[in-house]
Length: 113
Length: 134
Length: 252
Image (cartoon, rainbow over all chains, first blue to last red; front, side, top):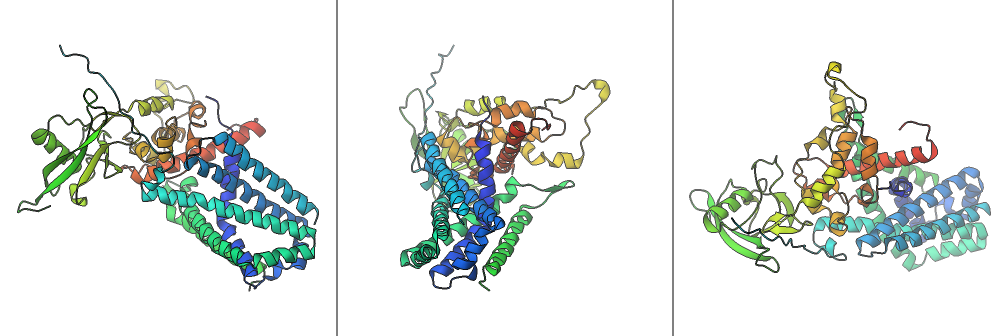
């Protein structure tokens, strides 16, 4: 019985899940503040652009988006399975493709800043 | 002697789509799992924000304006609730994946879980401070 | 539900009956059993069999939560019949064979699938180095014991399989107990058989079928915490994978 290649995706899921559990709530609070008219300083165009222009800012933004995308995509795949959708391979291809495209888009946008 | 008894094991079917309604324990698991839908959508919102940031000030201000729509605020509140449920369920089971043995005793689960909560609060406060919220 | 002077009460049991030779499908049968306050469900079943209906079939042995024979669904929860106390239940108590296994007859489930999986994971010490009698006994410190002690408590009762929804959906899943026992031996300082076991449990029908529902640990009567064993196997398998694919010169 061949050993699975699942570890690659699970490792990313575990790391991403750890990150998401620690930072996603506060990120939502930041954009919620922006949404209710109390824009945090760092979310202003000048400040955020300057942060993203720096290599460290790019690293952080990429890390957060990449890990969030892949961990949630993996969980979504499992959620489909638990809801009775048997076509696991098809679902996997679709969710991971979306995560991959979004990851590439992240890199492209970061490169333009 | 006696005849050979015929076996006919009966297989009880499990519903593929409704199994989780059977026990509250399973419902809580599914609630945890569907948090990924909200967090996933939120991540996409962040990606759109990044795109607008890269396109210029006017585009980015447009993104902020879209954030201020009522639908966005409702989504944020839902997403926050689901993200918190995800965080708490994650912290509470983290000790199972990361057992820490010192000498001949394991750290109690409450210590590892508690450590996660402490880091979460500290990190959140730091990020809020960094963002200029206070 | 009246209690009389001797501390007994009449308890209604709704028991699943299935006779493969005469029945097309299972049905429930109701019994009224006079129970003492200190009885467990197994005591009620034994009274039932001795006095009310000798045709009821069920497994049991030790009556003290060490043999793992009497696992069954009691009001929809997987429990050992010798551990579930009658006094903790009110109303009609529904008794069924363990979920996710075929029903052989009445409350007896077909355990073959679990037995086969147990065998596959090689749940015994596979010495790493050759030892002779002259080498003497293995020495193990309390710290080394602590690494696997919890997982050695498994009594193979299969309650975890009845609780695990992924096993219910995907019967080829090797399952909580088998993988926990593999982990128990992997963690044992005397053992050298990890690679062989990984071939079975680091597969898609092994640990990767687990989605960490955690119901297995909830129902385990011996506090084995199989969910923790499975997550640790995932972590170890992930580290293995990276070492194998990128750093094959590093000994695992």
